Length: 469
Image 1 (cartoon, rainbow, N blue to C red):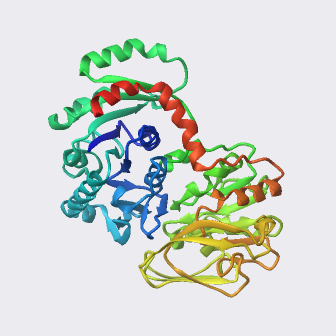
Image 2: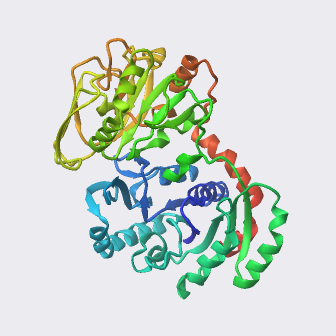
Image 3: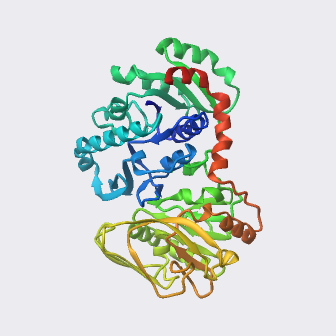
C-alpha cells in the first residue's frame, strides 16, 4: 500500500477537487483507490449506505474512485453550529456538541481512531489519496493537527502541496508552507501544484525554477481555473452567481448542506434580508446547523415579513431546517442549544420538537403525491435522497411525498427532510419547466470526468507515478 497526501497552503486551495481527480485517474489505471480525510470541518455532509454521516467531499471522492463511501474515509467530522461550538461526529455517529478546548482535549483519543481507520484502509486498498485540511503549515497547531501533521506521521504519505494563485502570492505561500514544516514532514513533500491559473502558464516559468531550486521540490502541475464540481466549504458560496438568477437560497448564518443546490446553481443565488426578493420566482430555505437560532435571526432581521409576502404569489420550498421553520411551532428541550418554544412562519401545518440529541441519518426513496408547486409536475414519480436531522415533525396537513413532508393548501409552500432533492434529474426538469429556462443536468460521474480530463492534461503524471509505484 502507498499513499499520497494533497495538502494546501490555505483553505479552499482546491484540495478536495484534486483528490477526487486523482482518485478517478488512478482508478482508471486499475488501482484499488480510496480517499481519506482524518478530520473535516464541513457544513455539507452525506449519508452512507449503512446510515453513517461523513463529509460530502469524501463521498464524492469515493464515487470518483468507483467505490461506495464509508465512515473510515472521514472518521472525524465537525459541523460548526456557531457560538464557538461544533457538532462532533466520530466514525459516522453523532457524539455531542463540543467547544474548541474540549475538542483539543480529545485529540489523543481521536488520533487512535484516525490511525485505526487508516490501517483498515491500508489493508483493503492499493492506494490511499489523503486530503489535508486548511493550510498544512499552521505552526500554532502542529501538536494537535489531526488532518495534516498527525495523519502524515501515521500514513507516511508522499505529500503534494497545492497553492491557489487566485489568492495571490502563490510562490511565497508554497515556499513558506514548505519551510515551516517539521523536518520529518518536510522530507515527505515530493511535489508542488499551482491551482486556478487564469492566463498563460509560461509567465510562471522563472518563478517555478527559483522555487524548485530553493526547495528541491518539483512543480508537477499548473492547473487552469475551472468551475468546481462541488463546493468545498463556505468560502465557495462567494463563487456562486448573483446576476440574472430566478431562484433565491436564503443565506442562513448556520447554513448546512448547501451542496443540495449545486445542480441548479446556474439559476440560483444566495439572498439575505438586505436583498429585494421581487426579482425571484422561487425561494428556498435550506438546512441549518441550528434551526432555532437561524429562525430567531431571520425574524430579528425582518425576513419573516418578506417570506410571508413572497408566499402569497410564488413558491417557497423548505429543506430540512428550512422545512421546520415553515411550520407553526418549534419546541426545543435543550437539544439545539437552549430551551425554547418558538413560533415558526406558520406557512405549513406542522410542528417540530427537539427532545432527543440522537440524529436521524438514512437514505430515502420517495414518491411525489402532493400538489406542491414545481414538484407536482412529477407527481407519481420517485425521487432519491437522504435525511440528516434532529427533531421530530408532526404533520397535520397534506404530505408532499408519500409519508413525508408537507404542502400548503394552495400548493405554493412545501417542505421536506429530503436532502439532495435537486440531484434528481426529474426534479431539475420540473424546475426548468416552471422557470421556462433550460437547466442542464449532469450526473456526478460526468461532472467528475469533465474536470478529470483537465488534470490529466496539466499534471505531470509520469513524475508522480515514478515516486508512488
